[in-house]
Image 1 (tube, rainbow, N blue to C red):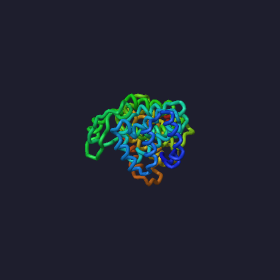
Image 2 (cartoon, rainbow, N blue to C red; image 1 turned 90 degrees about the vertical axis):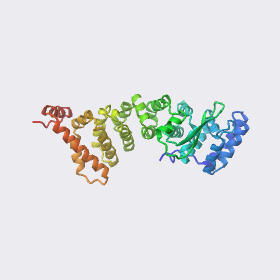
Image 3 (cartoon, rainbow, N blue to C red; image 1 turned 135 degrees about the vertical axis):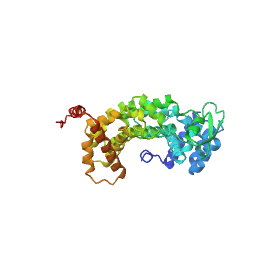
Image 4 (cartoon, one colour; image 1 turned 90 degrees about the horizontal axis):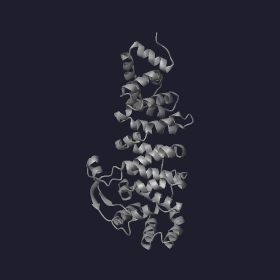
Length: 360
């Protein structure tokens, strides 16, 4: 879904870019060893061999393949930046654990924030994908070896394996590339710029990074709930955008503390889901509302906006999704229980707020 949309083939890149590498060498922006390392890497079409090159050269400041690609991202030539991003993305796709060799979020954030790339879909999508992976990496680490890298590459190289360590133990040994400052900057940049320019890339990123508890907390600190909620006000938003937005709220709803801050989201989701015929939007909406119903204020809001009535209508349809049916049954149960606990005045108040009086 992501990689095919703005992909560059190795063949076209290697053929088109050879003159660029020569220009960089002639301009002394790269030295001869770096030039040769680039050519050898590009000409090697075997991805396993490419990954091996990255590992084998990681501890050599003068010929580290990962350091070279990261350095090229700092140059101004657009074709060079795009090529480097494509290479790094390919590495992450082939071997997610190799992200440790490129764990410098600030470099990718710098590329993403350059004015000349704000309207470049390829650069924006690649940076979003790479940063999202870096910030949520679950790589398994055996040991950390400190090396000198002339301040241009990784300060630490990680030796990877698949031991059954707990995630918390593993992350505690990682170089700190998950700094709150960098994550916050990424989230804020997406909400400020991509919500209008590249909304699909923004939502794609949030669908990845909001799986992480730490990042969910940072997202809320950045007023992410309110800013994301505004997307649901757009009547012209596509079904896919609606689905992805509610999916993000579903991820947020896994935290009970965050649920208590999402009463206004309840109203938006109920209204939107009641107006669509798309099963996937209804399905993710019900799953999200189920989580949100754990908070009493959210449950009262569901009663206020007549979710129970919509549930009755939905239950008359033939659904093939067992999870959807389970969510309908669950929500119907908790809503009916809540209504039975409400006083006559509370029910009257709820009907007044909804604009549909039924109380006698």
